[in-house]
Length: 207
Ligand SMILES: N[C@@H](CCC(=O)N[C@@H](CS)C(=O)NCC(=O)O)C(=O)O
Image 1 (cartoon, rainbow, N blue to C red):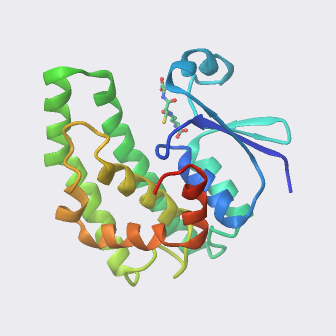
Image 2: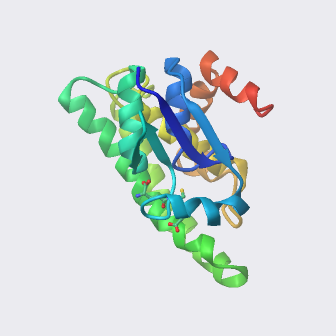
C-alpha cells in the first residue's frame, strides 16, 4: 500500500471528506493532515493551484478532489470495476462538483448580497441537483447510486447532504433536502449508520 497523506480543512464536509471516509471504511492507513481556516492562507502557498484537498502518494503531490476520491475509492474497494457502473459513479461525483462550483462564489459575499445569492440557489440550482440525484438513486434501486453497493458516489452524496442538513450554510434551510428529495435524506441516514462511518465520527466526538 502506498504512503498516503491527505491535506484538507478540519471540518466534516467539503471536497476532502469523501476521500477521508473512503479510506476509513476501507481500512486504508493514511496521514490525516487537517488545518484550521486561518492556517489556509499560508498552507495554500505549498499547493499548485492554491487549493485543497491534496494527496501525497509516496511523496508525489496530487490535486483534484474527484481524482483523489476515485483513486482512494479503488484502493478501498469502493469504486466499480465495471465500466458502465464506474460511469454512473463518476456522473454523480461530477454533478456534485458542478453544484459546489455554483455555491462557491456565495462564500465570498456577505450580508444581503450573500442572502440574495443563497436564496437564488435554494430556489433554482439546489432543487435541480437534489431532484436529479434522487431520481438517479431511485432509478438504481433506491439504496445505492451505482453497482448495487456502496461506492464513493454514495459517500460524496452523504457528505454533501449531511452538510446541507446541518444548517451551516446561512440562508439555506436545513430541511431543504427533506423537502425536495426525501429519498436522499433516507440514503444519508442509512450511510450514517454504517459501523465504519459511526466509528469515524465517534473519533471526533460528533454525530
Ligand atoms: N477542482 C478542485 C477545486 C478545489 C477547490 O476549489 N477547493 C477549495 C476548498 S473546498 C479551495 O481550495 N478554495 C480556495 C480557492 O479556490 O481559492 C478540486 O476539485 O479539488
